[in-house]
Image (tube, rainbow, N blue to C red; front, top):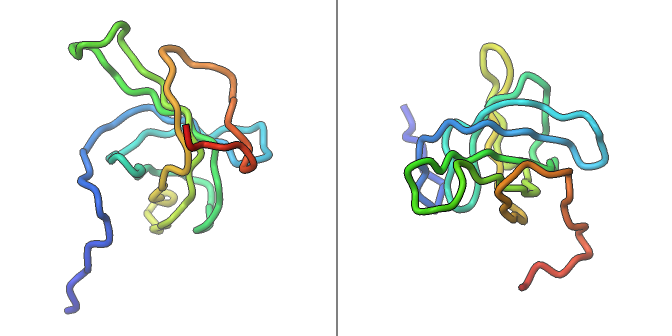
Length: 121
């Protein structure tokens, strides 16, 4: 049996958080939850087929109760690129790499910068 080579460069934290995914250019969202998260991306489960390289707008709800932060939750809005798809019994496990993200203390409308925007600041 051949050993699997770990390709992740950042430590993953097992964390279940609500996440909404929306394909770029679509108004329909997919409701799911993260299985784990890192500083560079997250893994979750979807029932719909997806493809490596596909881009999603995402909104992740991180619980903050007990942390030194005003508010009980933080919404991370991001664009993510699908980097891994694993067939599962009732859908697909997908690895998502953050392309751009920002944070807000409440859920907001889907506002994600275009590819032409400068993200350097």
